[in-house]
Image 1 (cartoon, one colour):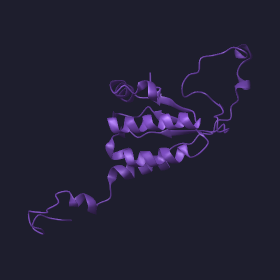
Image 2 (tube, helix red, strand yellow):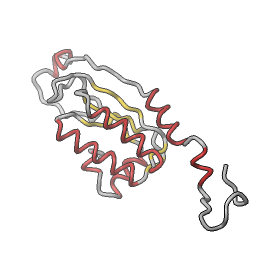
Image 3 (cartoon, rainbow, N blue to C red):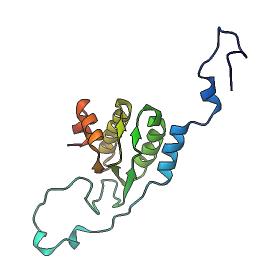
Image 4 (cartoon, one colour):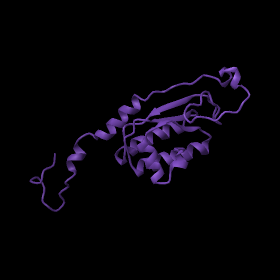
Length: 164
């Protein structure tokens, strides 16, 4: 750990101690990524009750099951977001989302536990939503906290993120 006595005042890096220790926010996101639940939905719409067959129903975001993406895969991966989505988590979250976008499976996010969110995280999620749309991957929310929804509305990203 660098101390002020070890180096002259000019060139002293007050944040050098951060470079020596592991980055806790990255560890939190990595842990959350490892424990993220991946659900494979195989329920077909044909299994719906007979009274609903043939009628068009409004789709409840995040609850569509067995919907095929343009990539041709019926799998949906549910990613549970951590309680804090801020700039310190953006790099790791970006890597996770990019890896999901490289797969043909649809992406469903569970943001029900998000308590704190900032503009950087919302911009990242917005870019992911746009890229998913361009690739024909269904990007939807299983649940979104009030913090997440109100933050998206404040930045004008609610429509892009499909948070209403």
